[in-house]
Length: 64
Image (cartoon, rainbow, N blue to C red; front, side, top):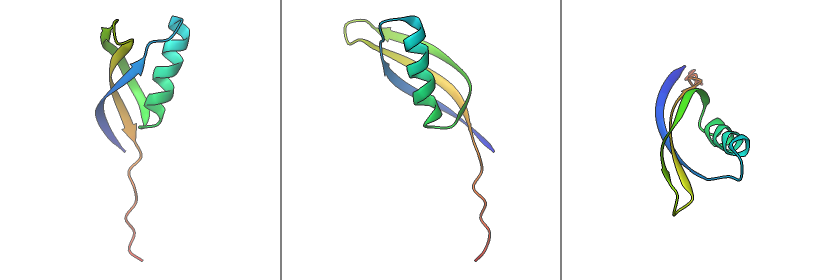
């Protein structure tokens, strides 16, 4: 298992609950989120910049 620091840009949502769901769905695409935070918000562009630490299962490299 390895950990990675990632950033993601998420569209702002109508409610905080929808925003949290959108963030978690995007982070799941990249691994299992350990923690995340909204680092900045672009109100004009309707985007949130998210920083996160995710874990990714190590791929086994067994010889054929």
